[in-house]
Image 1: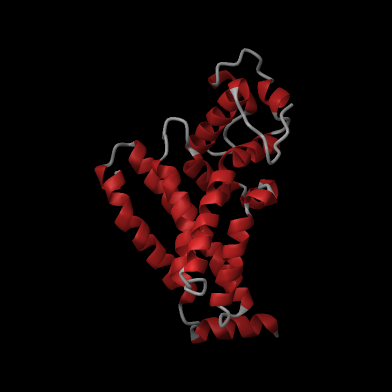
Image 2: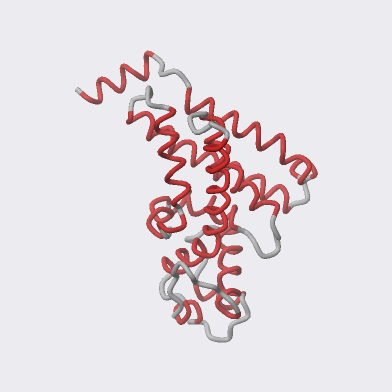
Amino acid sequence: MTTATESTVYQGAALALLETAEQLFAEHGVDAVSTREIARTAGQKNHSAVAYHFGSKGQLIAAILELRLPAINERRQQLLTFLHDAGQSHNLRAIVGALVIPFVEQLRSDNKHNHYVGFIGQLSAQRHDELNHHANPQHTTATRKLSRLMAAALADIPRPLFYARTELMAAQLYQSLALWDARRRAGDPEYADQELGWRTENLIDFISAGLASPVSGPTRRQLKSREE
């Protein structure tokens, strides 16, 4: 059985199973796909191939994250360094951009072998808690740093509202990009590479505005009544 570690390199049957699982999860949902179906679609005669290489479905999910997160984390670290050097570490829009852009870049990669955006969209909708549970902390260091910068940039937002807004941000990001991915795979020219630039900047604008939106009177009253 393959155990996901910092240095894991997947190849052969294990990589084929991972890419097949990622695609099937993206297309049908995590809960709708059995490990037996993954093995069959990957061309494995042994229907227990997933259990042999990874163990449980949860461990398979962890392996998919292990396959994709290192590159995303590295890219976010590059953007984090750029923010620091440019004196933009307190610029909310720049922080959001550093979170969003590496994820969008997954859309531009080899779409035959990369269904990560659709997979994350399904995972966040069906098994949200598993996204954080299975992610290797070594591959989310930049994301956590950006989250701390975001918290500092939004220090005037009450903490319960801040956490609720970041949860909404994640849902908006994952589901928006999963939609873009589906449209691109369907051949919609409105979501071709040349259209991703303005769509990405608009998404960053939208998320940033929602995070920084002034807290309304009704929201403050509801929050106060919750605390009483």
